Amino acid sequence: MEESKLFLFTFLAALGGVIPPGLVNMTVAKSCLERGKRSGIFVALGSCTIVLIQSFLAIMLSKYILGHPYVNKMLLRAGLVIFLLLMIYFFIQAKKNKKVKTSKKGDSGKSYLKGLTIALFNVFPIPYFVALSTALSPEKGGYDMVDMVIFAFAAAMGSFATLYGYVIGFAKIEKHTQSFSKYSNYFMAGLMLVLVIITLIRIFKPFS
Image 1 (cartoon, rainbow, N blue to C red):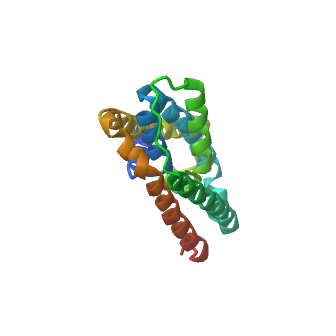
Image 2: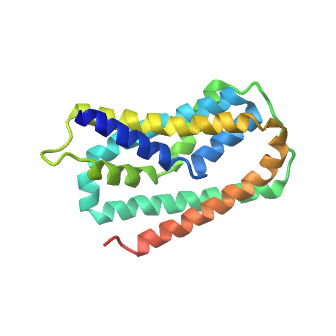
């Protein structure tokens, strides 16, 4: 019964956490529009593989990270550098203003690798899953191995459910591919700027 609750709450939390437009889901959307539904699905699978690993590590390290603010700050600083670099990259891509070539023969292996890579850049799920695993921790004792596996799979499946929703949604608006591609890089650059600001706030304003 406790395992069922852990799975359900983790699944719903992961599902809801990916709904707002972000680095991973916007990458899935772009891949879907530019290379087809299959490519979008494999990007999502690659991303969720990383989520599986991140959530498993988070539940293992939750007590340690929460008890050591320095470690949390180092993770945030690493994220700050990554977001700055990505912001510059997307802005340069947007300024190129090249017509995007669409292809329905996207390589599945490359799409999966792209999902793995882009999810590695996204460090925010780690503190998110740390906080979640701490909130759901049993009153008596910590998590056992079965609980940790359930938590990790629930997090990955919840994330994939939302990303698959993005694939289905954007697959239905293929005629707007050029319009979306034209402005998506500007959107992504703006999103990275927002994440940079949020990260700076979290670095210089310690949690109470």
